[in-house]
Image 1 (tube, rainbow, N blue to C red):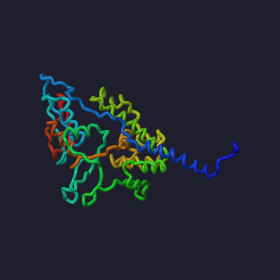
Image 2: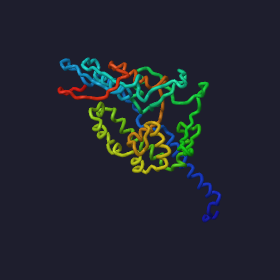
Image 3: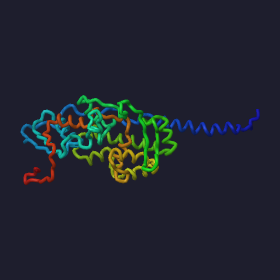
Image 4: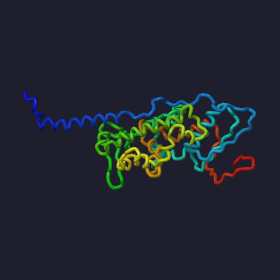
Length: 323
């Protein structure tokens, strides 16, 4: 055998095809693996964090808005002062319903066709909502569509920019390996860099709901303590540029997510929200509408809820209280 004999041209061609393909498939498998930043479920404290002082005068708390923020504020005030009757909470809501953006209407006035107008899904890393669903005994469903007969439709994902379909995953919309291959082929390393940045950012964000950071008295301080100040100071666009994530992937894929979730573009939304939008594993919704989470929070809080009531002004009194 001639030691100097070179491999055939055909063999070299196959190596040029197979080796990059193996690398490509390895990256696809890596991206297809569930991207959960934290496997440990957050559990709130079982005992009151702020003990009652029977000699303290009753405090009156006013919360403006019965959406997710207002409802959860009333709920956690009650939860972390369990058994304390020294706080009276009133929630003012200008609309005739609870839930804010999370509200459901019946399409064509048909109760069997409920449609979420906003905040239609939440994901597994949102421990507060997942725990609330469990506590209130609500039923969830994986997010999917149905036809007019109620038959489940296959998940289909596509991104349309108003002129062209800039990305099309077809029926492989749940993050399968074929979708991943398409993403890598079209956008290079941007999907991998985004996934790693998302896990890093969301991992820090979740620490805000763990001891010793939670509960926090000052949100800005909590953001600083978990190391998210710099990320908050950047727009989503700036954050992606800083981490070498291509403009086309940011515009076509990430901005599509920020628009759906927050109705904002990358140049106006901050970096933390941008990455939270990409933590999409385990998307689910409550059967009958996610507003039920916040309705149950208010009911549990014992707060007085005043619907159809607008707050037009807040005035500080001489004794330091507000009206």
